[in-house]
Image 1: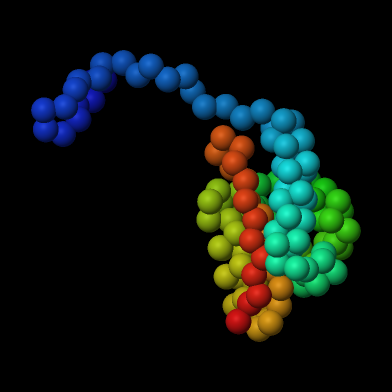
Image 2 (image 1 turned 180 degrees about the vertical axis):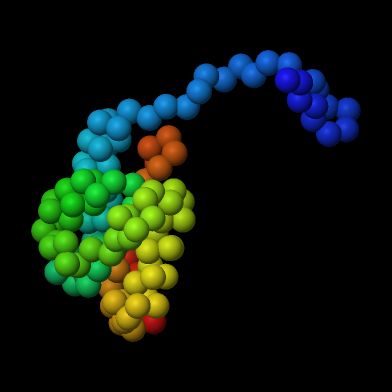
Length: 133
């Protein structure tokens, strides 16, 4: 097929990029190493400890990653917000979708502290500590 860009643009007759792929084993190692670190850094910046956190909310990529991160932080799975089993990996929408469900169901209440962390494309990552309400 031939694709044309709008206006005076260029004509592409063949793409030059290889297909995307993911090395799941390396993503797992990266996420389980870096996500606990970035959450601890955010807690230090917020002058808080893991014990101050009511809920852990991570990118819903893989239950094994979520369980390992929770374990490395010393948080029981009862304090983890997850909807992975219901929807699977919803990419960039996973944290806001899971948070919305947790709030609407009454799981998250006003004043609760939520430690969030995401990771994704190109293995970038970040975290935030939220006080709900």
